[in-house]
Amino acid sequence: MLKYFTIGAFGGAITGVPIGPVNVAVIDTAHRHHLKRAIAVGLGGATADMLYALLGVLWFGPWVQTRPHIPPILYGVSGIVLVIYGLTILRSKPVNPNTGTEDKDGQQSYFWSGFGLGMALILFNPSVMVFWVVFLGSQMADVDQAGGIAAAVGIGVGSFAWFTFVAWLAHRGKQFLEKKALLINRMVGLFLMGFGVYSMGKAVHYWLSL
Image 1 (spheres, helix red, strand yellow):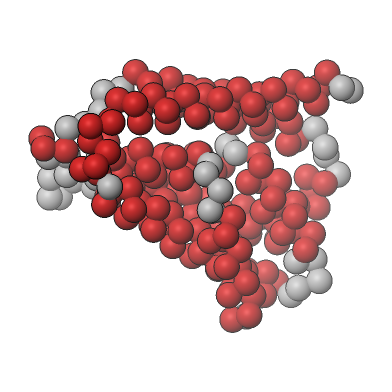
Image 2: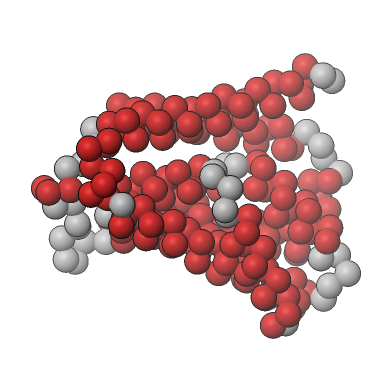
């Protein structure tokens, strides 16, 4: 089991390196809010990674492989969600770090809002679903259930470690980035909107090619 956990942790960290919606959201949250909320976003994303991996190992992978119309539907839903989120960031004003954005003691709403955002960005991202559910499900077909679960848990741990590292880097650069806050907001918003349009385009292309 330790072998599969280690493989999963390495895979979770490596697949988090390319800049995607969760990385962008972690960076944006660390800049506009604070480190704890950014880590919560990363934890939500890592949890969703682990859930998709578990689905792939235990059940969903073979089911999706026999229904090729499911991923295009998720691409369309993902595109709409990302475009709306990108527009929200474009319309928001950067937080001034000097005003103090840390949540007051006893208030944990920042955690659940960040955690929910991280989970949503993964759960509605069909590329992640296809990779973890379909690919991992097929690759782990010959592994016993305990080994597959260990690999899925390792994926969650590796993903969380990477997202936490990204949050820390973004937080450390907060003062340097302060003067470029508006530009960062615009870049993040446009990136997410572009990613959403691309995702919707893939869905449309699939249905038009039938």
